[in-house]
Length: 73
Image 1: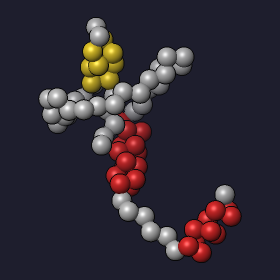
Image 2 (image 1 turned 90 degrees about the vertical axis):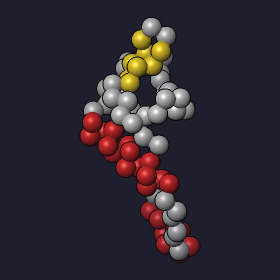
Image 3 (image 1 turned 90 degrees about the horizontal axis):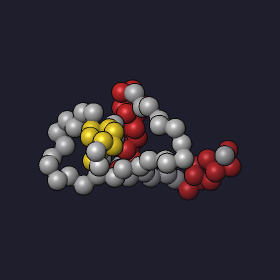
């Protein structure tokens, strides 16, 4: 999964940089009708992409360490 920027124009989503997005690829579009547009720069997109990769990795945590982390929050 990758994050991409784009605009809704003439009834279609037009990506600023489609890159290697294959024709017919399934996409998810998030928008907020009640909010001002959010501009996301290349650095933020890279951070989002890195977080998506990290989220796919299996995470293992020893139970005591998990409980310590919970107590800190």
